[in-house]
Structures are given as structure tokens and as C-alpha cells.
Length: 322
Ligand code: NAD
Ligand code: UDP
Image (cartoon, rainbow, N blue to C red; front, side):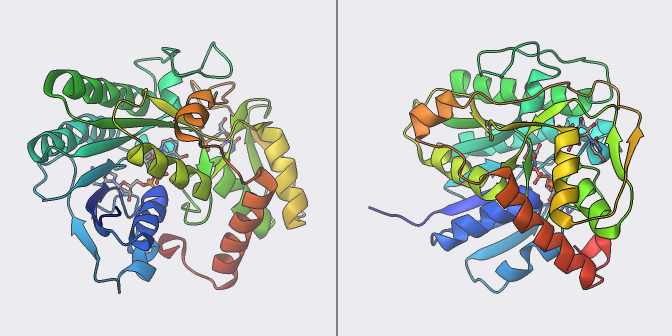
């Protein structure tokens, strides 16, 4: 029988979090969005504010959390390299102290807790495509380490809380996801290229553009989150969630230029340190256990995302309010 739950979403004002809150509310649940608004925005939640089942809690996950809820999704953490490298110490704290705080809460309340982990735990992967059993290749002292190692330590905490205290955990390793409500200036490749193309500005490819990524549309990913959280206890963890269709960054740039009809030219900029050369999820585990697979191909997802940014830019919406 369907039961409405009170669900805590940390990082709920961010790109993925706002879609998750929306999806949970649409199913009749009560949602508490906990966020410190570091990279999130009220604008992402504007359309949910009228809903009496929706609540915002301005709070930092690095501090203990007091709430009475039936489930917890932990998404709080800046996801773009530009943002997570601005204050790397805070990024580590958000990941590690944040994980401890949500796990302590889940343990006290005896509720399920979901961790938004990342393909970055595989670092610059030597195994391709990446399977969950691969331990990764991460530089522990590089510029990306605050995020990669922070997320790895968070996974450690999740599995230790499960083994030591019996907490029911769900860990998703999320691969590059895109869609409306990405910040236009956060440096991620899809939003960067679309905004550059729509403005007729140069498209900035870092390095030669031969590095690959696999891009998942946000709706597909959120369906995966929900399926993993609702799966029976004992599901084999962690679970990769992403779209296995792999593209070079050069291919992405060409596609965005073609789809926007832009006159932008391509320029090359230095490749950031430790930039992974290839990335593609093996999603066999998600398919077998959750019956999940992405349905929206890149071209279709880009059409929706381009339309979103086009509308914002045409309306002259200041970047910080997008
Ligand atoms: P985002 O930056 O849009 O959202 C993160 C949210 O967390 C923001 O609302 C931000 O204000 C909030 N936040 C950050 N630090 C906080 C803190 N200390 N306390 C409370 N709130 C805090 O990023 P996103 O793309 O929505 O990513 C959400 C989660 O998914 C992150 O944990 C990220 O690591 C993970 N993830 C995302 C992707 C992706 O492609 N988008 C890929 C892998 C993993
Ligand atoms: N990238 C690029 N131009 C940009 C932004 C990013 O060529 O304007 C590259 C970046 O070097 C990386 C890939 O695109 O190889 C994906 O970058 P993003 O920051 O979106 O995600 P991540 O590196 O975390 O996978």
C-alpha cells in the first residue's frame, strides 16, 4: 500500500536536488529541502514554494541535523570543479562531516539514507567502461582530490555505518548529468558550451577535446535515484547511474554548434590537471537490480536544455537568478 513519507533532501536547492524534490512532491510525499545555498538557488524551487508539503531548511550539512523524517537523500555538495575547488577544505568537510551527520540522523531515526556519490571515485579510470567493482585511480593530493577523496571517504562512512550499526544505505555513483537548472556559469561542459553557443562566444575546449564523457539527462537520473531508494533492502551496492553513450568533448561541441545554429568558433584552452581521459558507466547492475536504464538520448536532452538556456538568456535573466 502507498504511504506518504516525510523525506529530507540535502542539497535540495541545487540542480539535481530541485528535480528530486519535484519528483517526490509529485508522488504525494512531504519534502524538507535542507540547503546552505552555496551553489543552489531559491529560483530552482520557486515553483514548489506554494506546496504545503514542501519546506526549506537553511542549514549546513557540516553541522548536526535535527529533523524527524522517514527517508534521507544526501546530495549536498558543489558538483562543478569550479565550485568545489573554490574552497576545497569546505568541500571535504561537506562530504565527510555531511556524511557523518546524515548517517547519525539515519541511525537515530532508523531510516534509509541515500548517498549521491560520483563517477569521480574512479578518478582517471584504467578500466573502461567503469564497473562498480573497480577501485579507481585517484590522485589523493591533486586539485580534484577534495571532491574525489571526499566522496570516497563518504562512501567508506556509508558502508561502515551499514556494517557497524545496520543502517539501511543506498549509494549511487552518478555519471555526468545535464539538463535545465544547471548554473550557466559553473564551468560544467554542457552548460558552458550551450551558453557560449547561444551568445555566439567562442566554444572553449580544454585540451584537444579527445577526452570522453557520457551524458545522462536529469529526468533519467532522478528515475534511477527513486528506483534505488525504493528497491528492497539487500540491493547490491554501490550502483552506477549514468548514460553509457560516450562522446568526445569535441563531438559534444560540434553537436551543440549544429543544434543551436551558432556561428561560434572553437578555441582550445589548457587541459585542467588530473582531467579524466575517459568515462563511461557499465550499468548492468542498475539494469538487473532496478530494471533501470536511461531513455533520453543526448540530442533530445540537449534540445530541452538549449530551450531552457535560450529562454533565460532571451529574457535577460541575470546569471545568478537562473
Ligand atoms: P549543485 O551544486 O547544483 O547542488 C548542490 C547543492 O548542495 C546546492 O544547492 C548547494 O547549495 C548545496 N550545498 C553545498 N554544500 C552544502 C553544505 N555544506 N550544506 C548544505 N547544502 C550544501 O550540484 P548537483 O549537480 O545538483 O549535484 C548534486 C549532488 O550530486 C552532489 O552531491 C554531486 O556531488 C552529485 N553528483 C552530481 C553529478 C552531476 O553531473 N550533476 C555527477 C556526480 C555526482
Ligand atoms: N570541458 C571543456 N570545456 C569547458 C568545460 C569543460 O572542454 O568549457 C571539459 C573538461 O576538461 C572535461 C569535460 O569537459 O574534460 C567535462 O567537464 P565537466 O567539468 O563538465 O565535468 P567533469 O570533468 O567533472 O566530468
